[in-house]
Image (cartoon, rainbow, N blue to C red; front, top):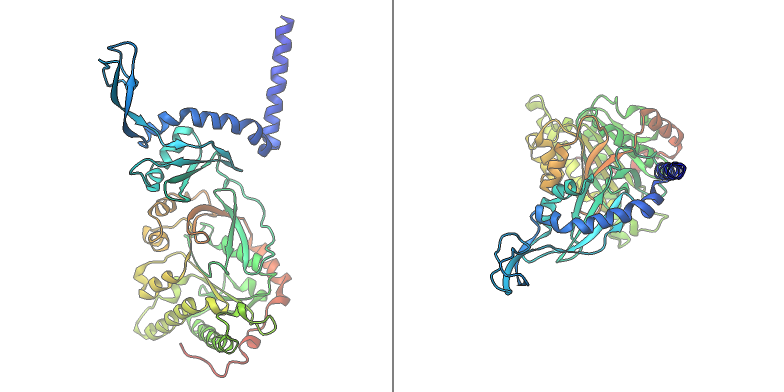
Length: 439
């Protein structure tokens, strides 16, 4: 009796220690204890999981039995001879699973006639079969498929916004893979950020302002909600347009700057401003647009010419601005083809796509529909209880679920005031322009 009590005490102490280890230092617990057990379970169950998910193929194999009349392993074929060919289910070859921060990954050899799309279609079934959060599929080369498994959702809680030391690069959140969500304007110059009210769209803009405020860049704002969104950040903004008339003037200035920088690069035999010597390199400009649809809506025909000028100038900036250091980050609740051909043309120039929870399928389709149908399905399933969660496509050509860091308006306002001295004057930036340029 005493020995049994001591054994139970030891077992309870070990269980408590393992629980404490898992809670207070989950990475080491995952690598040392949990992952080996998960890897063994995955390898042991792969045959029946692949069969259940429709990833096996029928192949002819020689079958030998020492008991005539026995039933083959498939349970379907009566074996009347000792040695004959039977059809068996062959699973894809699986390498050893490797641990990642939030799960594991494993490489598979595809069978004849299979494509990565077959595994992507079965990803949800695979996740449920193994009882994990999600599985993403990629293909590094023909004939190989990599399954990236996430044991638990890393987007439930995200860390604080880290500093952004690199120019025009901001870490705004975390991807579902556990990696940082980075917006790099040097790599992806123009972005569309769609989302309904309270979906996290404005929070992402706050995170971007906080990350760009300490950098030597000029920030330009377009806020057609009367300036209520961007006016608190005015100390760090070089220019702010709060009406369509002001927007036309500001866009004409941006077009004029592009033309001026074209001449500067041509004289220096440079393809873009980053090939210019630092002494003559103009300051990069990040254009923040809030409520993009307001730039295209018109109440009557009297606004038609103004809308046309706005649409043309913004499209020119999107088409030519990258080489000359002008980058776009366009936000909107409603982005649809009904706003006119200008929106569709602008979307084609924006390779960075961010889709938060939206109220209508058309906005999700305009933002993500031409990239991947699976991304569109995932965007429509974002719950209202998860603000900040979005579908992101851009940096590496793939799409991910992501969540931005929570950045309050007070934090963004403090960053704007703290780094107000870094905001170049718009008059100084445009002083050398010969005359106003019309769109």
